[in-house]
Amino acid sequence: METTLEFLTTRKPGREVHRHWPDEVKAKIVSESLRPGTTVNEVAQRYGLRANSLSTWRTMARQGKLILPAPEDTVEFAAVIVDPPVSEPPPKTVSRPE
Image (cartoon, rainbow, N blue to C red):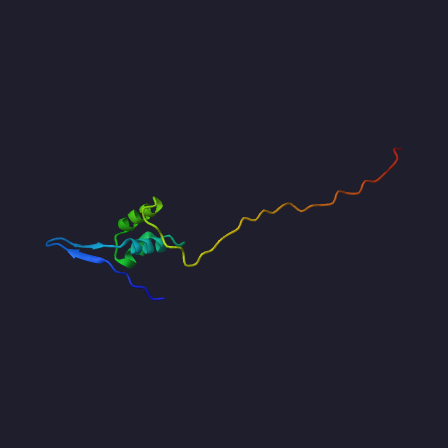
């Protein structure tokens, strides 16, 4: 699967490059950073971001200000309740008192 990311780059004289990331791209990067075993620093470095920018986007996602795409590998778990095994009560023996 091939994907391209587009963002707008602006440069003002005497200042560093400032990129404007569309919300769709931000959401894709945030969802990638939420995968198990992945770190914010690792994902930020892969996209040439500062880790604090990615952390800000993650906060926006938690607050509902950034809508994340549905995960590609959706895994659903169902609750399983295990009852203890049912055992038959021992048969009653009729005996006479001695």
